[in-house]
Length: 415
Image (cartoon, rainbow, N blue to C red):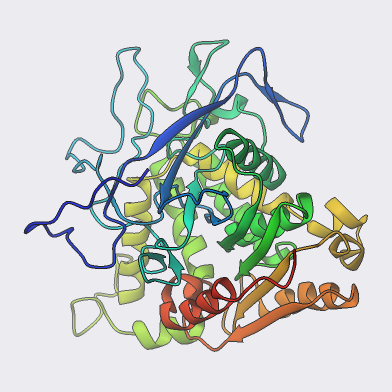
């Protein structure tokens, strides 16, 4: 829900914002109606956190679903009215039952895509009713491994079932059902969110008007699989991992930090890193000839790792990154043939790649585009020049904004 904007001298009083927002939760599974997972397991209780912005039209025909990336959440725009300052007590907070699950800190800054969502912005909340929900297995309000298993009264940890992108999309469809929404005007996502957008168009072709896939392709590359594997290895090798049962203690903070540092390198580009850091020393003129932080890029990565540990759960990182690995649109819908899979599409499709992205490369994005064109269906493709690598879908606000405004503003070519 969007609450009235509260003006008056606060640092959060920015024009063009959707204003204060309050995260909402909904229960989408119960013991009488469990959610069956693609891997064979089931969950008898699922709560999903989501946010909405704008007003739902009388015909419920103005809905835009935003799907988030690996470490994202439902807080895509505006200012979280439930935000709390991070305390100095650390990331974990001991509960009455003795466990200390990760705290879902709400940072005192706008949602992760606030530049794109709001009145007069590319995803215009004066026109669209925008929804963003947190994925299953994460640690930002939707049920995940840090939550209590009702059968054991202990955190799931690694007993949480393996989840897939397909599970996430089916759960999002249940959310829309509960909200009385039959059809999406558009679904928009970048990175792992882009794969969710593609899965929406493939799994529910009659339910999606436009699918916008940013910095994502039909599957993660072998190199991407390798980076994810090393990240998970770092977490599981941390002596504080305790086979995923670490919620009474500080947890595998060093392993999670290392995983994030490694992943963050894949989000950047060589050109961008060279321009931003080069071989500049950090706060010194000459090197110390030690194994402490010497270079500016080292300091930057250390900061990324430490800040990530303060806001994310290591088990969630394992489950969400694994879902990223498993997604392969060709295998899911075309028995290995991507063009055959794309014959299911009925939506208007936009695919955008970024020239220096080496996580979801332009070549991988073009493979998806070529598969769609072989079906005879129209598709819009843009390869955006950028020095920012994979993160460009978040950073290149003007270029991405023009693309989004163009396809969302245009009348749909399909009924």
